[in-house]
Length: 169
Image 1 (tube, helix red, strand yellow):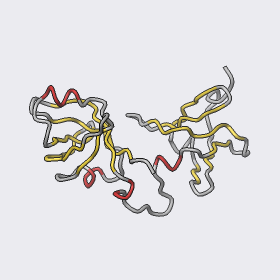
Image 2 (spheres, helix red, strand yellow; image 1 turned 180 degrees about the vertical axis):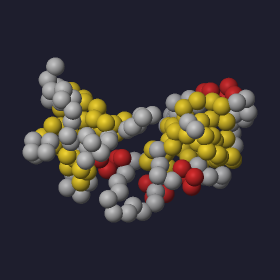
Image 3 (cartoon, one colour; image 1 turned 120 degrees about the vertical axis):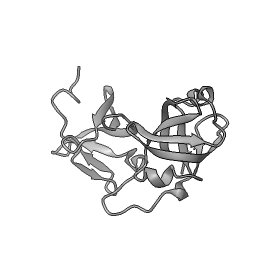
């Protein structure tokens, strides 16, 4: 299995190398704790060790051991961080990882195929499923009103999309 996405840098913060990370994990306090190591999506990948971390209204305010000025922090904007799959916690019932949704069929309430999940798009307001349809990619908001049933074991997501979301243009 590929590495697991756990967050990305939104922007630099201050002049001493701090960044604001959007955590993509259910336990940001643990994942972004002092001493944690995450790997960047750079080529070649770079490991970053967390030396300070605190809550921030826009995510998690993080300082890394090798980032000590604003210019270096600004260069990280948009950088994604990953961990090996074996570092994830065990899931409870009715929980899933975003990558578990890739390849799931998206159907309407009557069971008609709308498309197949190609990826999960992480957003500020809500995450979205990128669903491959006959007409291309449709982004489906992951809110209970639109995706009320997610059956990872059955590889099916029931969608109740608003009018026009899946309709041909």
